[in-house]
Image 1 (cartoon, rainbow, N blue to C red):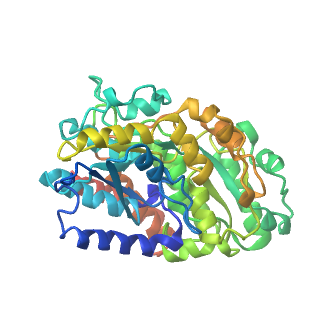
Image 2 (cartoon, rainbow, N blue to C red):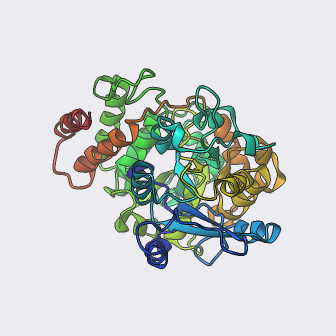
Length: 443
């Protein structure tokens, strides 16, 4: 899903694609992940598919990481880890779905975006039960529930979560006569009582005063809104309610009205223009789940100054994204893969990833670790991001239900928003009506 795609540093996207292609070639083509990966000496190669930047590998100038592969290999000399990084979750999902549906070609460990999980949970027999491997690992209750079947099979082990604050350009706020201190910005947007109406109200003041956009993308803002609706596109019985849900229509109307009033920069998420805009003055705010700090920093450049984050979010709390690790049954080394997946998601490793790469832990034990709780972020004007994201996580009160159809329906919604905000080819009502037809065509 493009509007839930977790992107890494824009600068490495091209390199990631090349790495994927090179890996495929080195392993003989399409079946690059499911061959016999134990050599004559008994060394096991575990092939891992991730996307963007999970922060697990060795760090580089453009790609922060906790260097966990090297640590695990040092502790397990019989194991070699081969991580293949897709440029986006969409890219990874397409290859993964093909591998699972055909029964061949899946990686030993697959990183999975939370929005894929409903379709994975609908076919639990294709994946290893990881419950026996998880040991003392702990997760937030709702995170664990997302990866566990009703009869208790643990299909996915949680990595991070995506509690959201509001990132803002303090220099643009100053030029517009708005407060720049992050506590004052939180108050400006309503503090604990922040609402989307207040966010758009302040946005209109900014746009009217400067002639510039308030937010980056309508699809991005809508994603933050829909993540606060418990049943948005599908009800608990699996019935598609997207076309008749008044909350979905109300969110669509609000964000498109703001876009037509000049508050949106009119950017398609994850496009080259979108990535480049983070070092321009095109917009002043963006929704900011923890993992998105990497995107902003990567797109703007680590030496760029001006971005900050406020401990506030319209509508209370919101969680955008967060991922899991799964082990397909077709893996030839699933025992070793399951052990590695459990190790990666243990509190110690989750804390190390946040310290290195800002992906906020789903483990309460990791969240309480001083390396997480006390972390500050120099790129965001030394913001206490460990405390801010802990507060934002506590503010999450709604865990949206996402049935197997959610991903495709939400993708069509992003298309609908882009027709109004980016290509400007349709009015809001025309585009919403087309979305309704697109949703019907999915069934």
